[in-house]
Image (tube, rainbow, N blue to C red; front, side, top):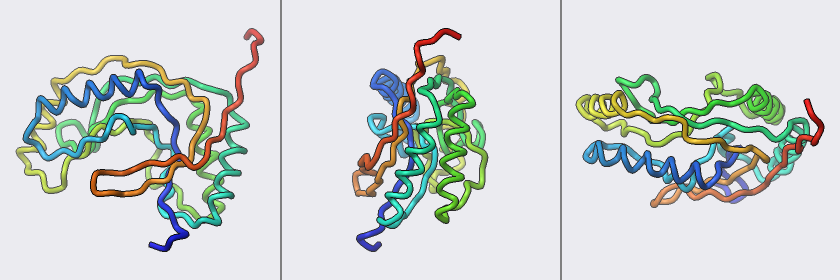
Length: 201
């Protein structure tokens, strides 16, 4: 990969209290399926991804920053609710284990605006509808049918209630460097959403 190309994504952050709760859930699941080939996400690095850009040229970074600044300035600070557990493509045949996110329409609008903006730079629209979620772990493609069933059974019996609320005050552009010990994320840019005024409804 050329030095002037970096791997990037756009995301919103989660508060420490939510990250800690996600870490506890991850630990409980790992205890229930110790021998299964699941790659667990480091809970300290969890975030809600709005758009994965992949490899991006250095000269496009400034344009992406302008898009984020523009879209963030049109939206007010918002909150998302976090809770529930599930799997893609389905619970009984899982490949990705996730925690649910309940997001307001404003978050979908923010993401759509960002996607429209980066599409003008030549980045493809996502093939699938945006389904807000937090990835806890990914089942290895080498997992046996028995392993997949084991994970599905655990998820079927495992309950996750409401975890908490995350206040979204900014949207961030992150750099992702893939290393042997896992991905390392570096925040490159942040665009703040507008604060709601103090007026009543």
